[in-house]
Image 1 (cartoon, helix red, strand yellow):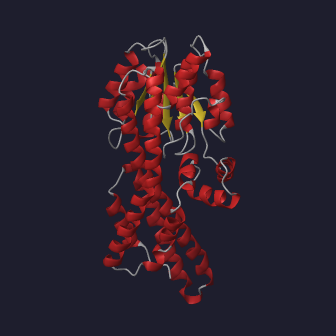
Image 2: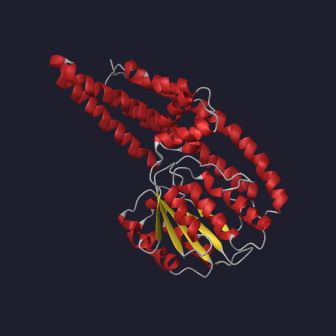
Image 3: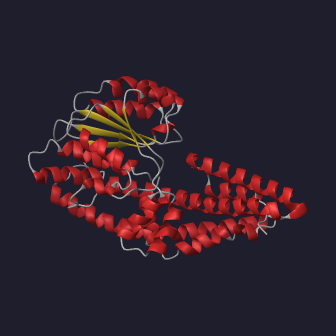
Length: 367
């Protein structure tokens, strides 16, 4: 999932940062003042679950504040991953292993720094190892008083079933392209441009906003669409094409890096204003590195989506291709299989260059 928008200080309704998820938001609004011990947020990347976890954490802590200024401080710091009583745990490898489970148990056992509540946000828990889940079960089921778990997952694999049964489930279905386009229009984007960007963002509002600010977005989309027509079955063309695509992905980071510079200045000001304790600048730097890695993954996913669109068109056109139709249909179907396998491989953080080269070598020319 790309990084989702943080709550801006002064925003009247913190939940406005989670568009298109009215049912989930209503459920969480009702729970924040008196939360249970554990929640499972289920949804695909970009669905708003990540942002909702921060907003919910802020609301859980804000409910204990004695005045509005204190409540606003809790909300703002939680949204920015800067609150001392909000711990975010992310996987360090391909899966969440036992070593991280030990750290989660330790964090859960610690007393809150500022009040009588703390929130542990566990990200990407659909990638949890079986032994890790077993080690965490008792802590999630019966955490120390005041500890609230928010577990984020795209689905519920076998390893997560038992933990999931101990949590309140909150569903975050994929956001529709129409909702994303409406958000962009509310931001001031022309409707035609909003529709184009929303389609490329695949239900991810924050990525859509990033693409909307990217003047070279259309050029990158065009480059991916031209790939089938460039292929001739040779490794030299594949290597050259992959090098150009990766250069375009490098270029795509410019808009995000500009946002990062602004965020650094904002967070430094907030740390000074709210007297934030802890390594706030270090956390932000780590977050920015993750966001840049995620951007590259999202760019590849977008490109693979454009390739899939081209070969789906080729599959439909094969019906009118006469004697060559069956062979063309088989080639297009094989290309779609290869693209889907590459999409599945993205979750394992593969070597980007090798993934693209291996894929393009399998794809038939688009002409």
